[in-house]
Amino acid sequence: MTILNNAILDGNRSVTLQLFPPSSPAAAAPDRGVPGTSATLTIVDDDTAGVIKLSSAAYSGAEGTSVVVTILRAPATAGASLGGNVSVEYFTSNNASAIGGVDYTVTSGTVTFSGTETTKAVSIR
Ligand SMILES: [Ca+2]
Image (tube, rainbow, N blue to C red; front, top):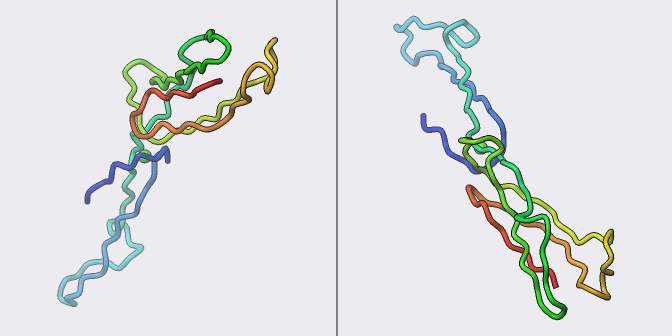
């Protein structure tokens, strides 16, 4: 039995392995439900979302230009592996001195890190 390596953060899953009664009546094996005729296989999820964060606490750009903001994905703990698809929403927030629509273009969206991707860039104008 081959366990597929999906890229979904789906946690551990299980599947039941079941023996059917033998087709030959001469073979004396128990029917289903008898101990020894079934077992549970646990499929261990190797995908971890990691931690999503901005590459910097501060960016700067002159009027009339675009600023590229980098969003990073890193393992939550050293040595952990990344996997699975992770989406994060972003938006510009009107809680500083600049005014959306006057000083910059109000921006929002979603970025999706696929598989082991660690970097995404969004543009703020
Ligand atoms: Ca998985």
